[in-house]
Length: 402
Image (cartoon, rainbow, N blue to C red; front, top):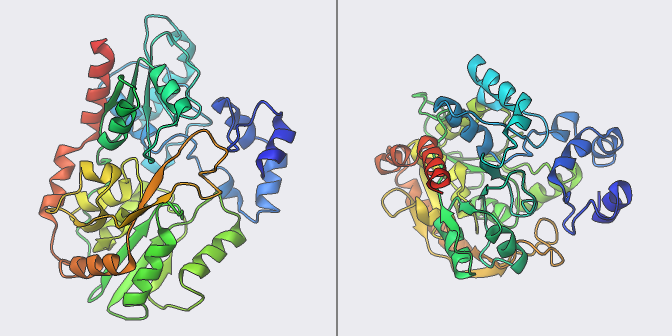
């Protein structure tokens, strides 16, 4: 639905210029609204499973909650929407911990208890307790006045990358800190053999201009298309696009041609399924994104001993090196504005994303190809350096230092 349609339905003041709820808690109403669901599954052609994809919270919330449980930290949990840990195969103890945290959440609304909010900057202008700490994910490079104001209003604002932190510090946000993410314990080597005598490339993440999804597929097809020695598996469905538009984007990426070695996968519902894909590939191409808050797919693949082709920009610089990745330098920049997720009217997410040339990308793929079958031992060291246990320890240390 358009922003105008949403405002007409929910009220002029309820919807921001980028089509999001001003009050993020209203997403419950969105998810549980039958009229909107009928529009989504009818006019947009999506299925009911895609309507509520359980990703309203950032990917890392459930992982951080799981670490808090391990550390026996008592919390009150205010989720945005329903809590669904199906992707994580949670233990009975973890389910009980979260249920207790949700049921007792109002007991934690006390001045002396700090609040940690994991959310976008857009929607983090409200607070529940006197002391609020924001953990957020920023992909751009030019903080807007409103973004700076919201982040300055927090007791501390934690970013998942040093690049994002530095942009905000340079903008006068002295309370900005960087706390890196880590490897989820669900991702580990399987020891299986998947495709014999085939070099298997992988591409993951929502189809976006920012991520150069279509450009990556075109470059790969130009070099390896219909060559039986190579395969590309793409898990790139974007649930925010109508089904026909998604089909059109994929058709455009392959320029209307048929390739018997490019495989478009459906959305993977569990971490176990994602882990199988990460283990099946030899080379990851997700790292060619032009701007990321961390880039979990590329990072996870590298941690599992795979080789990632990585554009040496934004959050990638926190974990990707010449030793553990195939790095390429950016060739230029492009405006973040894509008319869909990053719009001119929106007072959030401004600046540029980084670009690369097709020749540079193909050369990097060829370099990675020479390493296929070799275990990336330097990449696997990242799993020891970056853990969610360390992430949570850093958050708690920063909060209770105050």
